[in-house]
Image (tube, rainbow, N blue to C red; front, side, top):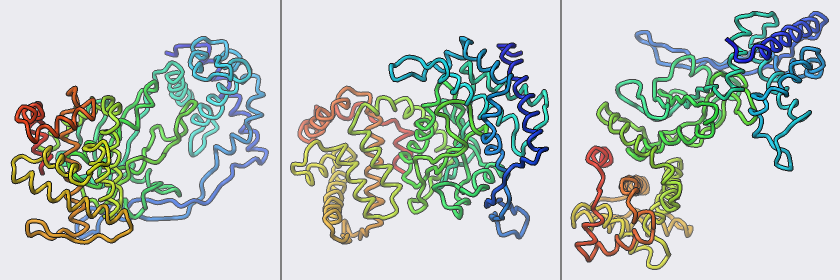
Length: 473
């Protein structure tokens, strides 16, 4: 049952009169324009002896239904039913309240003709366009109308739920779908979604079409209308948590919106828009066993709960941002620079004696015994020298450490592991008071080198065993 029967009846009258107008214009020769687009379709070849999944590309004609309606918007707005609908909608308390986020230059809620323009945009350019559908149907169908009206009313009353999915590249999870907190799920991508992603002339936005075989899973997220602003942060939390548990190039290139057509309302996105966590096949796959998937679920819950706390701690936020940036880089020397900036954010507050002090702090923080601390110390000094050479226009020079030759690739990967483990351990400690003050933490870290009391204090609340186990893999 509709919450507002009068609004529902006025919408029905508007839809019927609008359809009659457009049918008349079509009959008079006002055809719907077309354009040539590239249409791609994934061909699944699972039969014995097949060569695997392939991509087929064709040129097709696409109807410009939205343009056909938009070009006649002036005529639709002049209909008697349209005027009655807008007058009622503007006077309805629920509808007015829904648009109170729109304010004038004086900071007051928009009213009068301006409010009618916004309501009209939702009704004429969204509700009616969604009813007509694609391919367009200009007949009146009561079941289709009730479905579309119900969704619009949910939107007006703040109860509309959007479903988004972000295809994930370079991820391999054992055990199928994974239910996470906060309405998040990781599951296998299906053929329909693959074709939705690659099936238009825009392709996959920031992802080359040739990379479609990298996408095996999606992150799905159901978002209530009132909490839309949390969407990107929720999806990013999954990618960052995966990257922290295992250094890899896992990432997303787009976020797909359901329902697929234009969504109601001011500020809402269209069907597809770029993701913020790009993938990088050169950085490798994130492969999690069934046991590691359970560890990941536990860690992600903890990480998601700490996001607000992390955002207030500039040094950890900067380190996380640079760590993600390094994984997105395709050049190993650029990765070395970003990893080192992340470590500097965590372990330094000034530039004095940075090489030795930074190396010593990292070794003290991560090393489990004297031998491991000494080995990390020497590696960090060598890596810091390599970073300095690169930023000053030089060329990376391979170096030896404990009989092992480190080229730019190996140095980058090892430095990435040092950064990842440092971030993991920092996040495990993040709730402790001394981590809220960066200088206090660094002071405690320095004192731990000469004071057993400070060393014991630093070791309180060490990472739990499951996270340490996966972090060391």
